[in-house]
Image 1 (cartoon, rainbow, N blue to C red):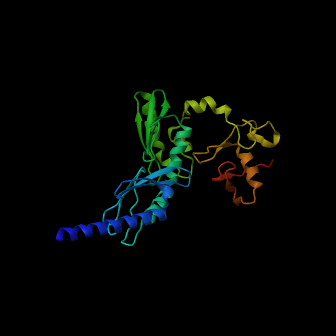
Image 2 (cartoon, rainbow, N blue to C red):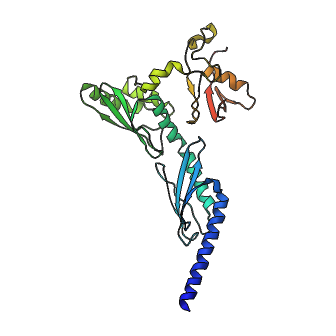
Image 3 (cartoon, helix red, strand yellow):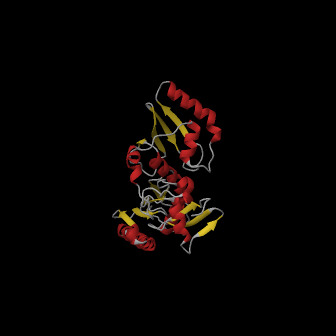
Length: 291
């Protein structure tokens, strides 16, 4: 009799657990559930961040859920401190994870800039959790940059790979110029300032650089026009930050297009609006000359 009663209690507890988890998955959305185990103690949710990147968060539930906080894992450089109480639900975990992804956008944008602008040799296909990049400098020299995921605009840790006078010269320049790193400057500009040299672009970028057309005027280069001044004949100089879009524009074309849109905002000399292709936020400086 005692065994039967114990078994009955176990079934009742399991039934309560299943109903609770099903209810909480419903709140998050079944379309966001990527995988789950038969006993519902292991769940994987697919989350899309503000830049269109797809992330998978793994959640391990205790049978006493929601009394005990779940354990979580995800392909990110570091995890957030989960805030949990006995009244918390899975939707609270997802909400906190989305907030964490927002905080990591500057980190991933910095790495995207490096991948687009520099000759990266390792890793070739980096996961969102990887925070380093090894890049070619030239003269059989590489450097490995370690980006601070909490403060990605800060001076990165740098290791030089190679030998000879060229590497020693670069290493000395880095030590001498490290205080010249300015967080508000573009990453590539800071890097070239410290090393006092122009860095090689990715081979495929160098090869196809002249073939990039503006997404607004559909020309590779601006026309020769006295009103354009120093912009005469220049190529595209602005790229959408959305990695799923990456559409290139002439900044002057983008300014003209944004000015034609009623939802565009202006703050000082910067226009804020949406990308003509993916509708993600864009911000571009107004040129000092008029067309």
